[in-house]
Image (tube, rainbow, N blue to C red; front, side, top):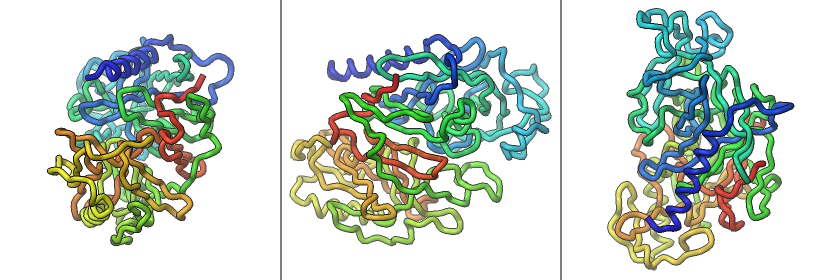
Length: 435
C-alpha cells in the first residue's frame, strides 16, 4: 500500500475510534436536530462498516451497513453483557407493531439477551449470505455522535433502542470485526424511523459512501449537506420518487408484508447518451414483486438481469471500440487495458452510463469513477455483474455506483435526492462537515 493510502486509512481508523471512545452522554439541552454514523469501506469484502456505542456499561459495536433488513441486529451469543437491556413482552404494543407473529417460550437456560421467555421474537437476516434465523427482540441503550467534522462531538443517547438478537453463526460472511448489521431500511424499527422518533427530527437520512477506507457518513435528521471546501449541496439535489414494492423481499416475511427496501423508477438506460435497447417491462415491479430497480449497500457492484447486462455491456463495448480490451476479470465481463484509458476529474475517461428516471431531467448520470473498477493485472472493468436470467430484482444498484455521491432518503416525502458525483465539485464524502 502506498504511503498516502496508509495515511488515509490510518486517519479514517482514528476517526472511527474517536467516535467509539467518546464520552457517552445525553445531548445537552434540546434533542439534537441530527445525528451521524461514520462509515468506512472494508477493502476485503467491499462492505460498508459503521460504529456506535451500546449497552451499560457502553461498549463499541461495529456493524455492516444495510439499506435493507428490518432492524439493527447484533450477535448476542458472544458475551453480550448489559445491565440495561429489557425484553419486549409478547403481549406488548412494541411486539404488536413488530408484526413478527413470534414469541419465545421454550428457553431453559440462564436468562440472557439471547435466552428469554415471554419475549417477542424476530428474524434477523444476514443479507450478504441471505441466511435468516430466529432471535429475541430486546431494547438497550444506544449512543450515536452528533457531529462529524471538524471533530467528533457529544453522543446522543437512545435509552431503549429496539433491536434483534442474532446468533454468532449469522455473522459469517460479514467483514472482519463486524458483529451485526445496521438496517437503514424504511421498516418501522430500522435506524431511520427509530432515531427520528427518539430525537424528534425529520424521518430522513443522507448516505455518503467513500471509495476508500477514509470515513464516509450517514446523517439522520435535519442538517445542511456541507462539504469542505465550502460546498453546500442542501439546495442542489435532484429528486425522484421512492417506490414501494408491495411484496416483501426479506428472507422471512408475512403474506401481506411489503418490501422495506428502496426501489426507484428507472425507465431506461443510456450509454454515452444513446438509449440501450432492452425489455423495458423488466424495469417495472410486477404483481409478484419481481423486476424493478433497488439500491443496495451489501451488493458491492451493480447487478443486472442477464438480458439487461448483455445489452448494457454490448452498448458500452460499441462506444469504446478504440480502447484495447483485455481478458475479462471475474466477476466482470468487459475489461480494458487500464494504461490506455485516460483520466478525468470524475474518474476514467469512458462513456457515461445513465439511469433514466421518471423524466430525462431527473436522470442519474454515472461517470467513470462509479462505472469502472480497477482489477488485477492493470485491467479496468465495467463494474456491472450478470445477475442471471430470472433474478428477484432486475437492477440492483450496488455500493460502488453510489460512492462519492450524496443520496438523501426522505421517508416522509417518499423521495430520493441525489447529487451526482461529488468529484465534479472537487470534494468527496470524506469531506462532509457537521459540527
